[in-house]
Image: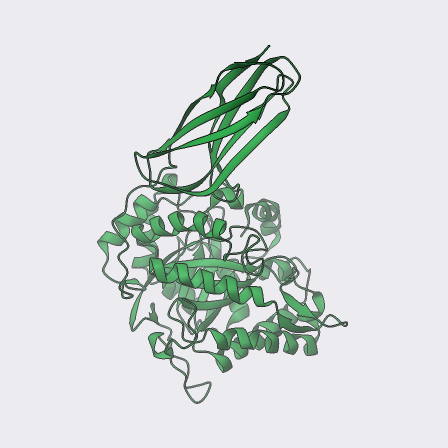
Length: 471
């Protein structure tokens, strides 16, 4: 759940009754196989683990959950996962998460109105933008590199998508039919654990924004489309434990519910109840993952993970790996995750793709040193200067280096930058920029900074690398 949604819903809860892109990968690599009928294909059981990669293990994961909102899957080279700048941002995050023991990544796909799904003149779904496939392929390449599997969340809420797609039976069927080729294309890929239909759909239903029966009907349509066209699991990201009954009987392969600290009493307190308690209360017929929760350093993270593991939940996916992108500040204590991972030998997916992921090292933002000069340092209006800048890093990292020159009035008169620069720990690069002074006399200033690729996050900025006097 996005933090900006969560705050607005706290009052509402008081009113709620407690109540690699390789489509040829063999489907046998997943826990379930293509079987001849719907009853037989139910490979998961009411047990406490989910079969995956040939074993039944605890799904230790994390929410990514997006790099660029509503753009990761569909924007291609302009902000999608296949954009080299986006991949450069993701690589160190996924590497460190996997080294800490994270095996499953929950990643949102079509947030807000899913513009990536084409419509006809009546608004009926008719196809998927090809860039979606390119971005999924890029995500699967990263998954192969870091030995992880994805839970892909299709839609951010029932009211985020066109209303007719939910309430009109013909459009519901058309949406499921439109998504079917996507499910078929990636069937059996060992890096896709599940397709998740909605994130927290109960809030729209409980708040009277949309009819619950229509939402359930669409979920059933999509569940059936996944099962008819692939061997991949399908689930729903339930807002709370007491939302789970809505989804029983729709054919989900496993259940997923979210838990946050304000849910500290009643039937939605996942820290109060075991999986057996929840299963008995709501007649669950499949395992249950806690798909969102807080696991920051101040949350007693090892105790939380131990509770979910020891009391029969099938997995735990804290929020989030990119807190600066979700604007909620909710971080994951990966040191605690690593400690938990070291204590257990049944974390899934197991490291069976032949990937050397390396040892876990607590992450820190790379530190850069920027120094330089501009020569000759004193010139006349219209004179030529040469700025020479040295940038060193304490980490192996890919970054963007930017050099700018400003006149005495604060106007930028020159700029040059280099993207996707490969730094080695302890090493550095020297950059040269030739620039021409303006007609204004006074002090001109050379400035420089280092960003993540594609003008992402600012690592460091030197506001006064060198001063030049124009006389």
